[in-house]
Image (tube, rainbow, N blue to C red; front, side):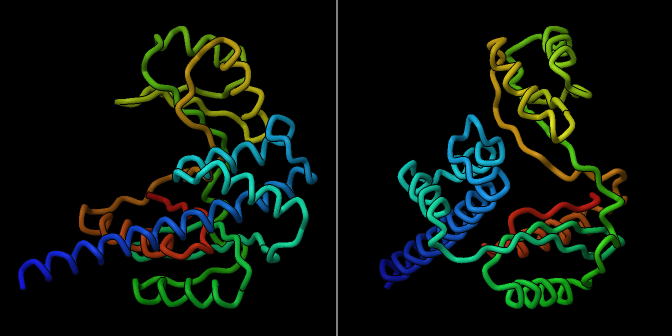
Length: 237
């Protein structure tokens, strides 16, 4: 019986992993569809920075190359599902503001899911503009600490970066969203290794939380991102 129980647990873990992986792939595919639309239908990632970002995100969840190519081809032909790109603004518990980016083929389903998750956690949906002013859209490039800070600082500023911040394990290079691609390309030409890059919504100020409150917010964010309709969730923490 113990063997059966162990196998059941293994099967459950594998099923859970498969569900998470499928959701991540769906999310990445929708991101590619949106990127192609934002980039004017250009399928060459070197000429469409939105697509290049989407492909990087797809690779970050280990989406196979053939899946990425299939998603691009499907989006190019326009024979796939209609994807709506929407931003939702909400309030979490403890005064935390939430900025939610979604890509969905069913708006009603997405709104219903978000309302349910938020209400269960003690939060609520907000109106457009309710919390967006609390965030700033920025480009960020993560650089592994295999290069001297002074060298990176000089090269990044020359490339057009706004700021460079040293963290425990990486350097964070901040840019304006529209200059992220140029700064990244310039740093690559200087043979500076790049770990990842993305456009994010950075909170202007963080809400002070206790450890228990922070864990509750993290659980809420995880719950939201279980839906493959949700691309990213940003919070003032």
